[in-house]
Image 1 (cartoon, rainbow, N blue to C red):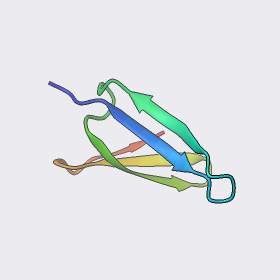
Image 2 (image 1 turned 45 degrees about the vertical axis):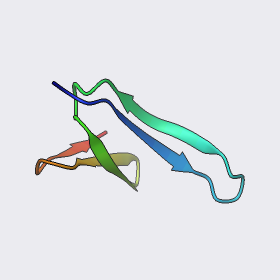
Image 3 (image 1 turned 180 degrees about the vertical axis):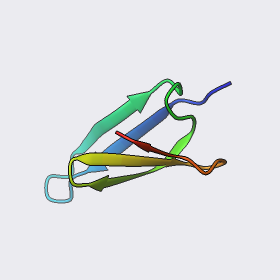
Length: 54
C-alpha cells in the first residue's frame, strides 16, 4: 500500500500556497520533505532512504 504525496510552496510576500507536486504514491510514498535546488525538486520520505528528483 502506498500513501499519496503533496509538496506545497509558501510564498512569504504574498501569503499564497502553491502546490508544486502531487502524486498518488506511485513515484514516492509518504513524501515528507521537499527541497528546491535550481530547476529541480527533491522529495524525501519518512521510512526509507530514498530521494525523488523531479
